[in-house]
View (spheres, rainbow, N blue to C red):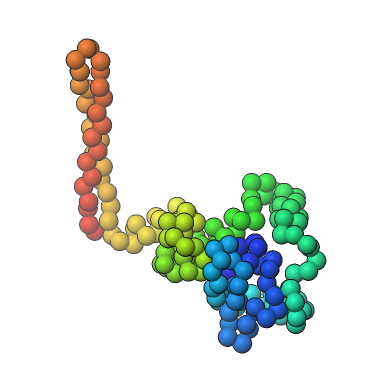
Length: 170
């Protein structure tokens, strides 16, 4: 729900969750740069459900984040999601926000990336979303494809493909 990295969540301390201002303070980041992540309303419900400690680390049950990853992977496989990884949730977070209208700069800040090119690798737009975007702009493309054969010296045949796009506005 936050797009935070596994280690960022694993290393959270009680004082890092600032419910009064609606943010999580990520102090220990992969990029060595602190950032503030908004707490979405659904996460407030989860926070309220658990009795989080008032001091020290929040997640103390496991000593290493790899243990959490392995346990979650086991549950995912049991549920039939064999190809799914915990890290895929970060990609899902970025993709859903992007399709909701967030800019790449917004996502870069929320995900804690140094370079916006990294953020581009995280956003995957669904076919349905792309279809809606395309149809929402009132544009249709009429493609005309022409294939021609050309003989090159030495008797080799070279094929050329020409695609002509005609934009038709509704």
